Each structure stands twice: as structure tokens, then as C-alpha cells.
Length: 223
Image 1: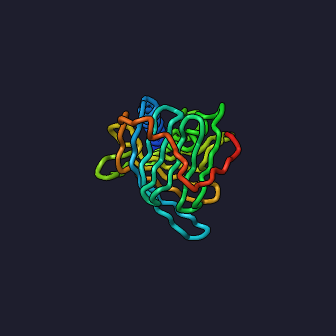
Image 2: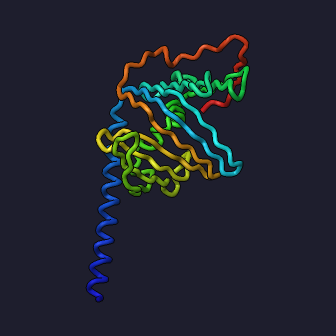
Image 3: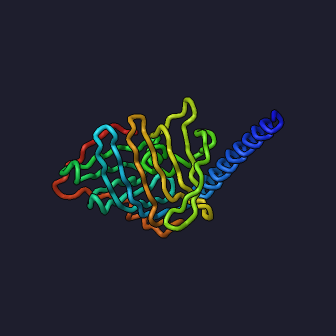
């Protein structure tokens, strides 16, 4: 009986260790795949759930990226909302919630870090093994394609915009298919990638923001 219990315990430990290795290997693949991208065009659907108020907000749009400094998020819902990083300034234009004004932040020496804070994908895949503990959360089909779910928890002392994240990675391409983040207050953000254009042709004009007539520029502290 003792031998059976010991054998069962060893088998469980071995399976757990193997699962952790598989999860880390998948995370390494995803990090390498995303790090090799020169440009990106992603269509997405986002749902933000606030457990404190019981509210849920849905948004849709497209994210474009070219290198570490150029980023553009164009929302189709709410229509007209935009977030643009032109390499020098970060423009946040949200007429759906703050009409008549646009927020401008000077990127300065920390431009790469600021672009990363807007580009959520880099939060997952920039040196992830150093920043997160990773656990395997199994497989699940996302739009008919196999994906591996990984749970990422920031290591002690590591600053991250979330307390926990679940990232679904395409089993074949290693590109992200969906992710869910939970912040310290319990706010849950779920983003599903509906189209992933790796190394897509993206014109530099996409990253230029022209202040509309009648819109006031509100300067924010540089980052």
C-alpha cells in the first residue's frame, strides 16, 4: 500500500513538473515569436468587468504597431476614440468619455517603456520568465484553433499592470489569441484577438495624430 501511495505521489509530482516545463516552453516560444515581429496589425474585442459596480463595458477596434515606439489604437466601438504613440508624444483622444480635449504626454527618455505600457502584448512577452511565475491552465479552442492557456503571476518585487493574467497562445503560431488580466482592485479585462496580422504593411501616417478643430490639448506630466 505504501509503495502504491509513493508511486502515485511520484507520478503526480512528475506530471506537475512536466506541465510546468511545457508551460515555460510555450511561454518561451510566444516571447520569441512576438519579439521577432517588425510590425503588427491586430483586430480585437475587449470586455471590461468591474466587480465593485457590477458593470461591463465592451469595446472593439484595431491596434497597429511598428517597432517599440510607434503604436496606434483605433476604436470602432466607441467610434472615434484613439490612442497614438508617434515616438515623441502619447496622444489619448477619447471623445466618448472626455469630449473636446486630447491628453498629450511627452515620452522623453522613457519612450520605450511608455509604448510598452500601452501595448499590452509586450507586458506579457518581454523577458517573461524573469518577471512572471507561469502555470499551465490547459488547452481550449479559440475560434476553432487550438490554444494553450498560461497563468502569469508577477514575481515578488516586479511591477506589472495586473495582479494575474491568463494568456491563450496559439499552439501552432505561438501568437496570442486571447488574454484576461485582473488588477489589484479586481477589475477584469478580457481581450480576444479576432485577426492577427504579423509583419503587416503599416504606413507611418497611421501614427500621426492631428488635433481636430475645437479640441483642447491637455498637457500631462512626461513619462
